[in-house]
Image (cartoon, rainbow, N blue to C red; front, side, top):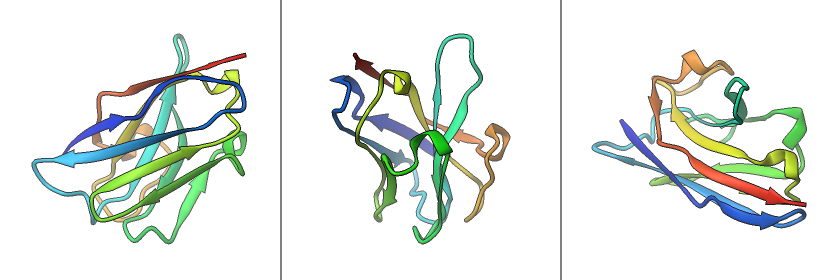
Length: 121
């Protein structure tokens, strides 16, 4: 599975962005998908994940009530509202091998190229 993330950009604090993740070569409808982010010098961290059916989600505490992960037959989305400067990072989507996945990077063998989100204060 090859993934492609899009939708990043520059936004002011308090603004919103919606990231999209799509798959090429084959679909990822049966795979759990996660959104990760990474800043220079820090480890890649899981922001949100969703199972294959879309009825089970997880959010890291720092984005709860601001970010929403969702999916349809073709894409996985990350709606980001009330953005803060500390949300600035490169955001990656990643797919697990199975229908459910954990929080670690190692649970996700398939990765997109990343999209940069910059939140100005």
